[in-house]
Length: 472
Ligand SMILES: Cc1cc2nc3c(=O)[nH]c(=O)nc-3n(C[C@H](O)[C@H](O)[C@H](O)COP(=O)(O)OP(=O)(O)OC[C@H]3O[C@@H](n4cnc5c(N)ncnc54)[C@H](O)[C@@H]3O)c2cc1C
Image 1: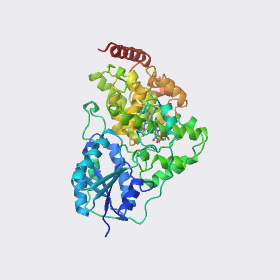
Image 2: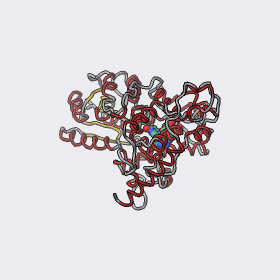
Image 3: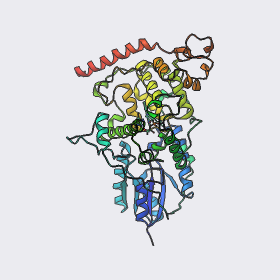
Image 4: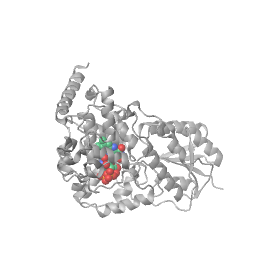
């Protein structure tokens, strides 16, 4: 009789092109117990939106496993050892994780299970190129995207694999998926105050079938991506991020489906490259998830008094009086997703115009985004805040009104999310407070004067550099 293998699903919630799953099937001649473990360490800081989206993703996965996924909750070593006892497995297979917590956890699991005579195999990665692979001549990781991307793009791109066939999915007692949402969001920072906890009401579809449908849709309109991707009112980006985040689609599959050489294609490949770059930076510099990557930016002075908390609240609710920022923050609340251009503008506004710690904003994004990903989020924030790997970023202060006029000139995006401005004609609907229009009476007055706060931000950045230089 064959000995079963345990396959531990984590950030690879798919059957197609899953080399680790194929290995689990191969080793056991098709006798696999598939499990997902609710780990409170990961669930507690994840907000309700990501938990809801993950739940839907797992429901879809479960349906494709004939309802046999085994959901357990607890410390992974203990859960896996118990499952191995229950089903007689001697091997646990999973896709390797490269984020700081995941790496440490997998090391622990490997050691704990070895003591119980259970073998662990961590294979493949959630990336096209395994983090830590692309290095300079001195053997170090790159800190500049262009240099990283040159090395990255020469790495081989293996063809995607089919889903395994002839598998018998073992059954075992399983928790209900309600447990996932119960476990989420218990580690809520105090500066969130009374901000809403309910998951975003209009979440994207989940699961492998929906992912392939979205990929096919995007393939049909990849032409024009390079220009269109900056216009938030257009659906010109792929909207694949939640699928890629949970490994419902591997970026290998995405690149294979969108092969080509056009400038639009190249731009898209670059964006996938940014995701890989940030994972690589985080792999080499795990502390950059929790503190500014640039030492010279660590003394940057942020506000954190009661007024700062009120401003944070207004920002998070989309009530700053700056229409593009507010539209983005409301899109986040409603859809659990925000357009990339607006993520940059909203993040810049928090740091450069409200003088709040980028980690506050990053935490709120992680709380509300369905695609919330530690590497992309923390480094996307730091790129915008000017505290990350970028060389001379401190003047990068997006003017939220000019950004709106440039990328949403007719106010189509703003009006979609800021209901109070629906009757206000452009360009007034793009101005702070909705401009001087008679139609905008219900919209809030601007929270701050962006021009004044820009000068304050420049002064604080200069002060931080000076403090770092003098070593105080
Ligand atoms: C402040 C801030 C926070 C962010 N937080 C996240 C996050 O938590 N999770 C996340 O996946 N992305 C994050 N991004 C990156 C980017 O905004 C999203 O990946 C993108 O908006 C997703 O939409 P899309 O799938 O339509 O993108 P597309 O333009 O279609 O890009 C295709 C894929 O490439 C990747 N990608 C695109 N742009 C970036 C980028 N700048 N950095 C890293 N990967 C990228 C994503 O996987 C995306 O699905 C953040 C950006 C900023 C500025």
